[in-house]
Length: 220
Image (cartoon, one colour):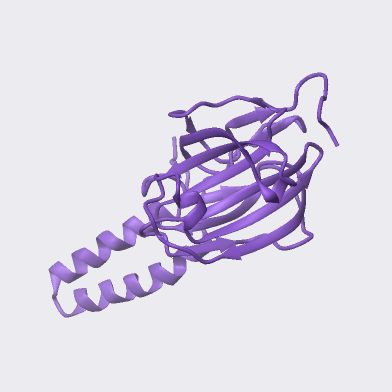
């Protein structure tokens, strides 16, 4: 059976092109060690920016994971982006080895998009979600506002967002990415039925973080 070619995110080319060029030049001059290092970096970038296709679960009652990684935080909070009502806050830590393309958790419309500069604390620390550089996206869906935060980490010095203000989004579509190693948080209404716990491993656009209850309580 032939192996499938995994797509890569477009942002990879700004790294792949110079690395490939440098490797070829080093090889031409017979500098094997620098050429080998350039080759290793080239293949790491390919791996880091992989962007596999996902079979998005159907259902308008689902809230999907916005990222691949490990659930590091599950708690109740009040957040201004959701109207300061009581919410679940689910934090997902992405290591260097996770897919870093982020995905839209719910169908809806972007009603707010705000970049906020900040620190670069380790992304696994809870205070990183408050103090670090981040991009905050509020999506208005049938369950009310859902907040997605792309949070930079120690090595992640570049947040990329592919959606815009007032854009209509489909659950599971590509949202953006963070380079290199990061944290993504999603803030959702507390009346939704949570489907994950701290320590769970999730995949963006595949794993179900929460559901709308069968009685539809809380729907807007």
